[in-house]
Image (cartoon, rainbow, N blue to C red; front, side):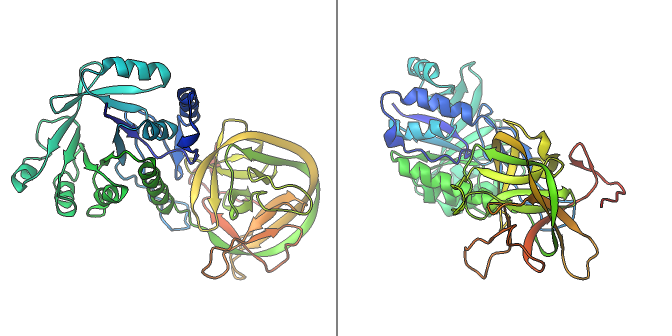
Length: 425
């Protein structure tokens, strides 16, 4: 029996559906609890409403402290399928709203006993929740006249599902134009990820969502990858080159290792600094070393006093991090994502003081203190146009080296940027 599922691109976890066997629902339920909330960019986005969605935002490239982050309308995806493998992939990625035919209440109840879902039901071209409230209206559009009948002022449900049949680009553009500024969310039924992308990008703004009608898991994975790419591109943080002006032994201190619930790639790390006005990109321990096994989940971030960037454009002290809190993982191009802290280790270690300036004529000094160890590195600019990542061990760091900084406002109150005169040395 066919069903629809609401989806949000939230989890980066790429588990193979083919590995799910008899205990598939226990595993799917477990994955659901792991992804109940997420953040995108530097603003909090609440996840897993009755109908999951993907928040897209854009970040100003200005290095000033006043960063504007306007949200686009949520992009929502439903899946229409009869495949259990596709369903498995859906639950794995946090899709929690399903639409069933009216005579399948028993099936909906069975699924609700196996996984945490919100069932909806199709009846005579409408979609209702279990309380018999209408949540969507379904239309077939095959002629210009039928297209003209879809107007924002019509008394329809807040969600509209459209089957454009053999039409694609032109009707999608007309629908986007007609519903621009409307509170209604318009979905288009798509049979391939490529069609879905066309609807999501029509007139740049795109439709509010798509219904991906497929039998193949790969189509779901491909569309999910598209959302990941789109999210990363639209969530760039502005990073600035700085020149190292000082590297000195600082003595002993309590440094913090931050172990995340996510693996980091080469070129990724946390933004940390002694002053909130300038945060250094500290590399993870994902690289191979002659001294110790790689730990791609760990950042040896610095002493307890240091600031670290967290979601919402805020900072907090490294000493305040604990299991369950979230931090922002950034790469050298400014791509960012949110990760959950799994563990924090504070230990007494020898430290190094590093200072840097944007250029020789700039008086502002930015500093960071890090453990004096070969496995601790700062990230510098990429070399040329390639994808090569530059991680400079602090034990090899010297005056004149280039590193990356995140510049922002210095004045903070409980981690929130405020407009206030402040001097930090």
